[in-house]
Image (cartoon, rainbow, N blue to C red):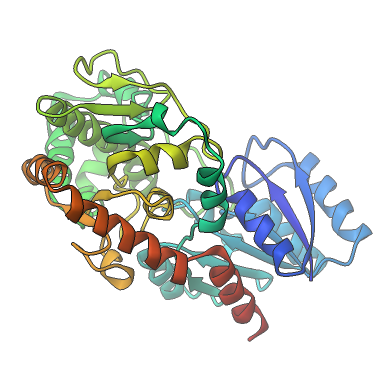
Length: 386
């Protein structure tokens, strides 16, 4: 097949491209910064000209871009997207019903929602990991000792979130209500309650303080956008900081991030790491790796889970509804339920070295055998053919 890929900063873009090439397909790339996922006349002209010059079997993107769907629908070319974020505000757009679309989403809740709306070509497809690429990195590394540690977290702490900018303008009642919503969500494992708590009355009050901005073709609403782009990131910040502060009271915790951690006095700040060349070393060399899934992801398994296991690392993660579909909890990875459970399990697995190593080994073997990009891309292509 001849594939046109839109290149942006998605972490798994290169693994997907290399898999297409490995399977014998031909790939062209197009790259341009976008101010909007919905409308960009300049980029639309560029990609339209590119498609008309070549006979592509389909255009592929990581995540969904309404403007690319519009161009593909106009030209009669298949548009294939595979999500790595959820929910994607860009999917709540009238273009999602185009017949050219072939959408693969890693979150089953997201799949069921859009299937229920009447989107015809949509499938659930979990994310993946290229174990062979990571094995090669680890086999040739000479500085693994640099990344050794007891407990490690790699990721953002979301301190630059829009809720902090908005909070001062909210009424006292709304501030108290949203604080209660966030605390309730933090204390619930494996489920999302924010949407149900953004009642009609609360949203009507919120309209006085929060301006809803969306394109003409978008059917996203105030509740979805506020839940996702505002509360979701603030909840993630609170949950991650609180957990790291608690763990650092008892254990040596390394944080790899470009976030401001000046208030986390006991953690060891290690700076940010490159996804491709350094992150697998952190996951492999750390005795325990942490995953905190942002609450915007309702049931799916985020990319960090696959990357930790594919690096042969031991994973301690919050519970997600889809984890039992692919992994045996306590055998391939370990889930925690709340901060107290996280602290206790961290201490247990630091003290039980062999048990921890066996779990990391089984998790690695499972993703290597069943959850590689070749397997996923072959599933995707079969679905397209069918």
